[in-house]
Image (cartoon, rainbow over all chains, first blue to last red):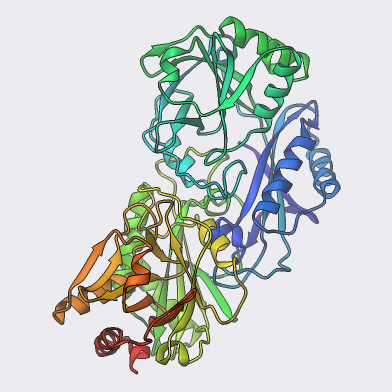
Length: 282
Length: 282
């Protein structure tokens, strides 16, 4: 995979070893889809990134600065098509010890990557999923934001190697469904759409937010709620979402098969495609 | 604070931006006291560091390699007195995404720092402590080891600024005492010593392990157990421990005063001093 990294002054290959992002995972990041040479839903991503900085008590970089870096980096790579932008904001360089200086200057890093290659089938016929063994810890102080503390996701994603499984679904200690290792999850039942509330674990995805907005605008019901894992056995359709993929219907989770895409998932994918998430056009 | 960083090839100032330690906190670290130009309890620290690598499914660097780096780094800084060595092992450089290559080569980093300056009073008259607001999440998969995911400690340590508080004690969601932000904690009651079991959160400190061994050898009772926060109101003495300080008696926690050092804490400090942790000599 080709990648190029930038800081506000230009391209970089390294960061100072005393960066608190490296030393403590003290920072946040966001992954943004580039389509037709533009950062998609950039304002929503930057809003979440800045919220993360605020939650961690970091200085919050101005939105215009982050948007400007995105534009400049995409332009300088000559990317006119698809790609991935990864914005990282750390608390910057610091001394040893957990205590930080109130005036520490955040370090902003931006990576531009090739788009990952996924079979078209993932959209048109759905993906295989499994329930991860690792349970997400409950930490309300960090829930919702995308911090650089991602060991739970690393361990969960590496529980399986089989290419027939594209995503793992994660539960909390009380057997509630929370999210995928790199996605949010929606269930479809007779009552409409349902997605786990992200209050004590998990990332509140930009695409999840966009899907909820688009679905509600179209008259669909979306319940944001506690979702016990048993609901996976009772619902008709399941799909996962993230910024790079839009939506992938779930064809099975463990031994449980689903229509993929089922009629409601198809409808949401079409709504999403109409809103500019074009890979969801079936 | 002066610091110098090394990798196995020599001194460094930076790390590659694609290091998974920076991107995901995907790695472990350990902080070792240097006294008289030697790494103290080095074998125990390296054992824990290697256990951490194993728990994360990383390749485990050979102990001799880590010990050799420690010796070489201390020698090259000309440190004949006291200091701090921080060993960091990340999963190394990687592509975007939580999945890692089974053969990824860990990156080993070693920082040598000046010793932090603490008032002698901290040992002889004890420290002020408080209970942190942030609760430690329960994550058995990561409990005990010292990973680069340290945002909980960063947030907890920055809850207070007052110099009269040297450490914050942390609870889990069930109001059990777990540890300090940078230390382990022991309570002294009529039943002997007690320290929280580190099974679902917290770091299993090398000094904690050494204290338990030294105390048990001297005929003291040490219970490693669940410690409800109420026990802080019932016990006679409290002390915290880590590799740099040995033991600090606790003079108060919030509004609750303690004898500092109380008779049992004094005895353990003397035992520790006799075992080579010389700053505990009262």
